[in-house]
Image (cartoon, rainbow, N blue to C red; front, side, top):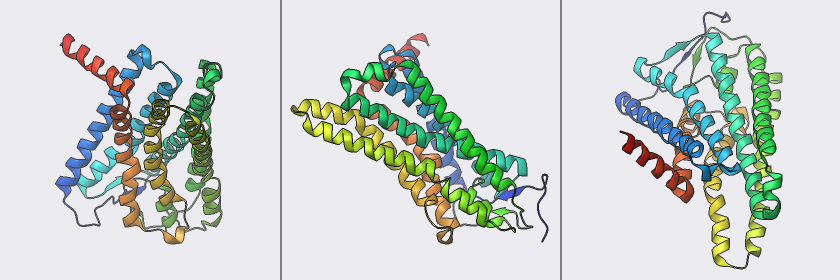
Length: 310
């Protein structure tokens, strides 16, 4: 069989092989994408402009919003194009660039969520040393480490997949260049690639998830020991939004990637993938905005200032 070259590329089918209302899906996704940008930009602006939000927790939250906007932008514009055209071509280089940034941002979000859990652990379990332990230098070092580790992990995945030979069938049964979808298109042996991807590739998901579990077990033990109910409620509320975001992200990601390739179902995976690539980036901002009083006050102040200027 012939193999694709650098110019032939692939064809993203998105949902063109399924029966659905194009206009409704396009409109829904466009609204979600617009809300993702609006909510996250408003959240980032509130964190930057409000002095009371200049704390480690909101520093990492602002970074999470940047990742969410970028994560959504990697896939949604191309998906909207696929819906309008009933499938769309993407060059070999464009496909692997999309994969690179998708893995980069997905890995970064996983690492960032674990860093945020560690921040909450220090704040709840070691409050007297929190300021000295979570200083500006440590915050920046953690942020740089997340981006560096994510970049190296993504580069490895992209390189492995780009070295495979791809057959004449260039139809990607997904709305973006996903690792598992491209593995299915390869006409060369994928044994080594799958071994590396499903071992090393699982580490940025499983290790942060375990660290988060350990952090919250320690947090729960500390909260239980708090004597007053009001203090317990305050400590729990500072973690509840983060727990909801963790559940949304890891629930879908673990279902998609931490399983044997023999269980792969392109139709079901496309639908589930929309949860963490499109819906979760929008919900994250709303969860933190609606459940956090400090953020709500900062947003109201920012909106009122905007109206007063107009």
